[in-house]
Image (tube, rainbow, N blue to C red):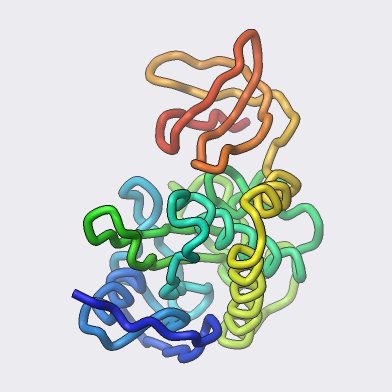
Length: 253
């Protein structure tokens, strides 16, 4: 099966969906039906089965937040490192949120959006391969904008409205996010992995700090050093350590 390859800027076209099970599911279906290519994006007012990392659900209030997915074609020079595309999307969300929330915005490895010690958003990248060929990716983003009441089971959430005291137009903001995505995608296309990772490290939550992590039944302290081009978290204590996504859990205060 071949997929439409276009040079559209990210967010062109942008489709607004009143309600959908998951913007990632919808986007995947559109690409597989050959009805969408690189740059096509969808903003939902409501997700009935929103997806988060490692099978977690993403629950929000109708029309108050950015629930958004975009089709991305992996740049040929970086097809061996899918994490770099994930880092690109995380940096774009960081750039966008930083405009309004200020410089206390951070990226919590691998790609959660944090403000201080509170979660403002999350990202889910779903890649499609044909054999060993990385054909396309669907990047899903959920960012808290106007919501002020959250499910009690959600740990330390925060929204842009809570941070700034202002209410925002979600459709207007998602267009700003598309510009941030396009800028970072162009950076990925035209620069080395080191350039992108350097920016990622500058925005990395708890970089250079001692944190508590849990692996299996063991909880230990270690210092965050950075992230590798393949997406491993790099830390140091009595040992130099590296962890794959999902291998460790953060123990937050």
